[in-house]
Image 1: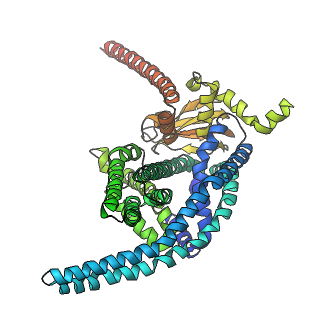
Image 2: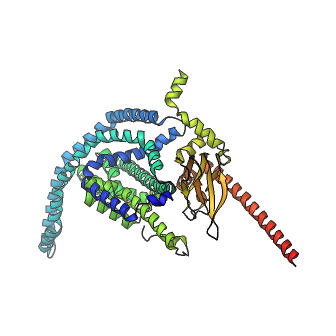
Image 3: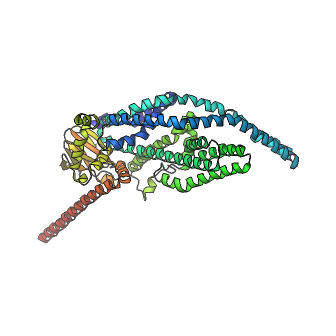
Length: 359
Length: 173
């Protein structure tokens, strides 16, 4: 009875949620460290659960884990970071030269086409106007785009700090939330949290497995082909692999350019392209079935739409969080749809009828 | 020194909670480590007197385990009156059908006094089944035994009811 008296109108809850989202959009820059910390805490939490299940105290486990991770990072930074950074800076230094030589090659090709082919000159003019100039225009913005990522580096120091507190207090905060929740809604609330938890966990695990596998396969393949900067190219390919096809394409373009100019041969570049095509196919054939078995089950169209909307609204960070946010929206939609279907008293011939199309 | 170290590293409530779960028939076959995994999957809430845990018709999503206090299960009869089914106490559990499939609750549950109750969500149970199949198998076996016992009781009461019915029909003749 008391619950009914305290019941808040659904419209008020919806209005509050919309207001919160609107406010979050306006201060999203300030929320980035918290969102990243949340993601990191999410990654580390299962590890802490393993120790908690053995009776160890959470606070001491978090402290111990931080010490181990800090030691690991120090050792890793000593050995791995100099190699990756030196390879990346060498690659960065070589890029203008590669671009200049590509431009020269393109000019030679244009001259060749203009003299040898009928309507060659018209073709070249058309290509310059429709493709080349817009492409060069976009390339000019790349350094600015990369520079915009620099402030994110400061997060390297802030994020672990916030994550520490999140890990320490998450259990307590969850317990308080359960206690504060109206008694009748605890069961449904926990169900919602568990659904989101599973969905996010699957996505993060899937992304990490794919990124690790793509980076490892790229490194082994590029090393076998004797391509310079193998580690940097493999890292780049692994890092951007959370965007569908982007890992393979980045590897193909950068690796192909490096191999082409290193060996001064188109065949060397072709070998790299074939390598990344192979990695992409192997990923599709062997990895995806394993990963997607426990994955987010988002329709590919929704997946792409989420990435595009996230990128457009929040830039690079938006790309990072687009799919997890879509997962949460999907779980909420499914739950509300389920409540609606049950509430409407509709007779369903099969459970599939209770699902929302594309979701 | 060892005591001090234990106090520093070991969660004091853990052993108590573990012993409680181990005393339940549902978890009695599980090892200490398995019980630890169950504990990690459980959520606890203190319900006060008169608080409603769920209402008949709500979607069932979790198993409820009473650590302390009392909970009443009741049902609305065809005449629309609240009928008390049973009062459950410490060590009892209810709502286990929610772990098997998502069906509307067939009764309502109300806390009769301040009660500490653990909830095991269906999704968490599925995760346990996936990551620790032995735990899942053990719980599922107990649930199957429980359902089989209920089915047997229902069949017996049905037979008894039919016998009683035919006797009264015979008496009427």
